[in-house]
Length: 616
Image 1 (cartoon, helix red, strand yellow):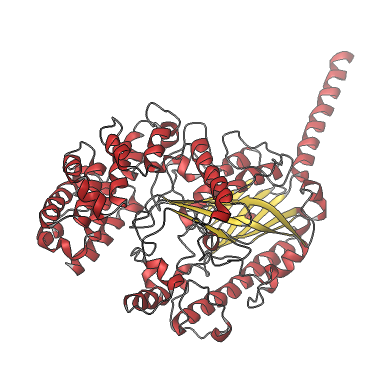
Image 2: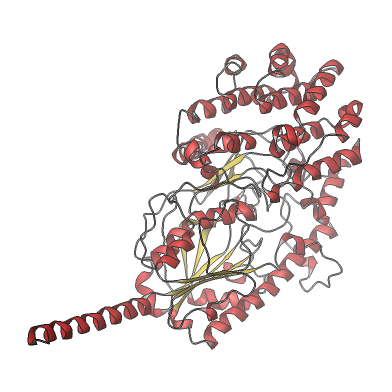
């Protein structure tokens, strides 16, 4: 070997050593990240000033970290909320807003753990996923009840989620249960009746939070025992608002505001935002839409441009936005469409289906003693105005001042003093819908049928396939002549909203436009036929009801038009109540099975059918 080649070898060997050392140093400089999440928990935490709560472990974490006061889950129910987190996209832009539906991301968009794994992180999830999006390749190194940072390679940075389920809605009505929290000390919100059942449920909710706090403390102790506390950034947050009725599933502040506590050890204080001080409170508007870009930013990864939130920590902190946004789509077996906006003080809600009551019969919600006694008292006429509202049709718009109305029961949408605020927040809601190309204006089945061979996100961003402004315009119309014009639009979603607009205006509008609705019964789009039949069935005479039922029975079989059309038709039949009895035999015979639909959604038509069979 020549001297020159020997020198090259020594330089190459040194360079190799240097590269290895740099790689190790980079790995060591990257923080471990631990997320502790819990189901169905609002800011009922001691650290947030709730004196009824007993949460010593989370309070200690908050004393070392920062509490985000304006944190929203974006969705008031689990699967869409997790879908927001895993994708970094608002589910209304991906067609994934409906409970346990299943859609896909476009090619090239990946779930955020994929980016972490690509950067060398060991990514684990213990254990619940519950996304409304199909997996994009291998998302987790381990997603199971055994998933743990302890299973990583030596020296490998980790990202680990532990999801605690003891606070889930389903745990509140479990009996027998010996209460630890005194039900006499419960603060009953203005929308709930003050009964022993309601007080017991709220007290048991707080009991479960205390149990969860102990479990969270156990995970934090494991971190300390492993000598990792000073190298790990810790997040704690709730999955959405409390599991109590009118909190969970409803995009009010009460259903969307969550605790979010973040602790950055001294070693990683340089990754904090200016408002992130140990033991402090941040007023920044943050939401689940921001969690994916934030965790990537903390890991030193620039968030992909397609993500719709912004990092609030790390090397790539985004400017703060002015609003938090929420949404509600189908909740289990019941359809609805709500959008909400918050600017810290005010909450605005747009109800796109105002003729549907808030308290639709969702089977899971009706397992709660609070729901049962609340509905019973309504039927008996024993509720005040704030308590009755849950069981009545919705106004098209709602506006609440959180500074003076924390329970959101005093609707200011008609207040002349708040007109400017209403218009500003209304515009913010509309602007976001147009920016993200909200495909929730399509009936659920059309989200899937229009995106065959593509994805809902791509359909939403193609105006030739999804003329959003025209569809939104029809959904916002109030003048009947313009609605009638919409009945001849070439796009089925425009025609659907035209019919819905007539139905929302009640019996007088339906009867005045009876012939137009009869023509819509023969529309080529199943959802237009269903909407027309429901309008005639709810508000028409005996002849109208008979024709409406015939149309609904014809369109409903799942094997004919799919499970989502079947579910919508069964909801329409159920809305007719006793009027549906003449067709009881034909209704009972409707087949509800559809193996082509996402497995998790197949149970919902059967739930409505079971209720119909019991009632007819």
